[in-house]
Image (cartoon, rainbow, N blue to C red; front, side, top):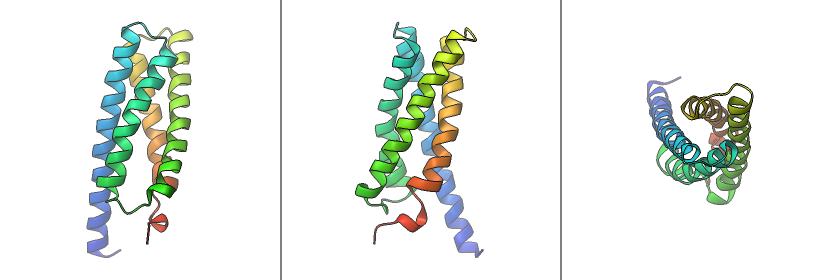
Length: 135
């Protein structure tokens, strides 16, 4: 791998991580706030995920991948990925609270880690693959 290619890959990875951490923090804070305010864990977590979705897609496509992927292709894939991750987050929240009696802060940490890992893998391997760039 050439030095220039390694440098490019490192920058994109750093950008992905920065956006991911920002979206994860947003998800964490929103899910904690909504569940603490009285919403059921599943509902609060899914709402938090939907709000974080808008921020994350815009930043991942525009900044991390420099707007090279056509919205008509990337957005439906990103939406599908995040719907799967939102349901996974909601299910994880339900299990954490119902089965393990987790507090809202512990529940939020669990869903943040689980959903973030799933989102990273799916986004890297499917949504924003290099061979899917717009011409």
